[in-house]
Length: 80
Figure 1 (cartoon, rainbow, N blue to C red):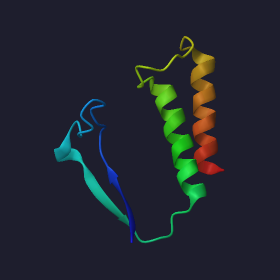
Figure 2 (tube, rainbow, N blue to C red):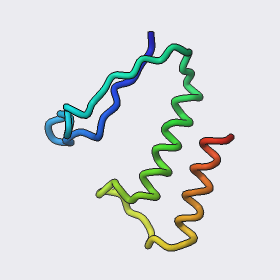
Figure 3 (cartoon, rainbow, N blue to C red):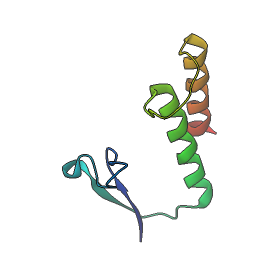
Figure 4 (cartoon, one colour):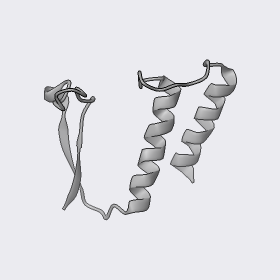
């Protein structure tokens, strides 16, 4: 059985969940391939870029072209 532990992030210093009550284990009843994981990671990357959630990230000023670019990349990940 394959699955994932899903949550709302973790403390980088302690490695502990930020909101343990909101964490959940999800079991998958299908095969998850390396390609699937790479697609999910690309999707997460572009969602983080569009939301500017990584405080260590060096990114250009947000503008309409940046938003459209992120939206297009997210669409590619979802519908490719």
